[in-house]
Length: 333
Image (cartoon, rainbow, N blue to C red):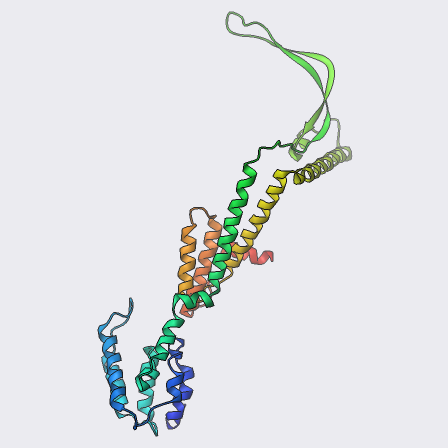
């Protein structure tokens, strides 16, 4: 925009260039810029009050010292500004100062505090919970985690018999073990006496099958024997799982497993939801800290990545590299 076009009408268009923090303060003022018929003294008095407050009151940690020469030019420009025809240099000075300090033209020009009230409301915790998706994500995970913890309690209250899957690999000869009387030195002799009867021999894992392969089997016969035993073991595992699922304990364990899956899904929703407000970022930091003693380190690290994403977004920086857990999840999708 050239200086020749920066007039009263240009003030309206200039509102689009004002930072987001001050945007709510501009439209009404821009639509009704005052004329000399209005009370210029009141306008200047309100502007002087703004400068004095920013000079003498606590604003926030790290707030820089007021630029006195620039603020003086701002006040001087308001005192001399031609509201009807516009004064390019002075109008630029006024608009830039108001924009940089997040103030309301509505209030300076017309004494209307509406812009300031609405801007502060937009920055409130109430507004943050309405517009920042992280609050809903936190509550969804909190509920899912509580449901999972409750579902974990019920199976532990049931005492049930555990029957492991097994496969028969042959028979063994029964016998009786006897112990001789202890001699004068404390020694004794154990004697194994076969009874002539046989009992089936079972193993319970693939490793046990490998350790009990008959020595006389070689090559293809050996492979066939192992494959058959593995197939029988898997079949027995499926049979036991099917029968267990019908029991009360099995049904409670299924509910527990479903609750665990929902909790994990809600955790991933939380990780992929970047806070859009500072209040939301503070809430996520607090939620992560509340549960750091019971949460797996990998989830904690992933949530820290989410928080780092939010900080970078607020600062206008590129998104940080993905956490290892997040990267793995992304590749798995």
